[in-house]
Length: 168
Image (tube, rainbow, N blue to C red; front, side):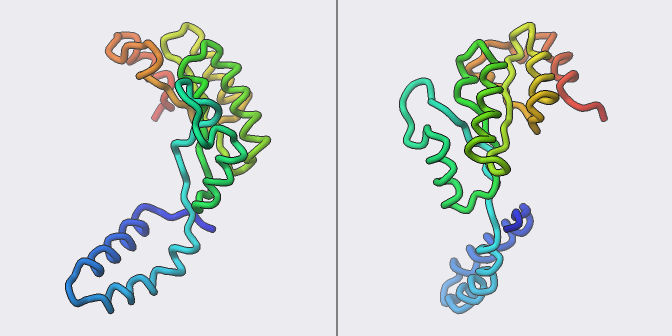
């Protein structure tokens, strides 16, 4: 399966919606659906908001990685960018990121893409970022301003953000 680009998705979605909404145009809707059927079957979804492990406040149905991967694949997900619920409240980001990487390799190599976490409020966040990139070969990171106590308006945040972003 090949991933769908935004233009193709919107075009096929809008054409189908417009065709169905027109009164007396059911044949046009049927024609549009038939024309797009092979495209829709061949497309897959990239889920960019997957989290592994336990949510800190209650047990979730798909908290076990194997079950989550099966559910995602059932719904035509071809790639899932995975973070870790442990990053929300843990003080050991290095351990969180190492467990995430190991879990992605064990239960979804090539399917689960680990995205590490850093906490910009901690003095060693740069080392966590380096390990995400160099040791774990992660494609990206996540920060959680709602759970991690850093102030985005703090004067040092702008300089920290500049160090995080690639230079243009």
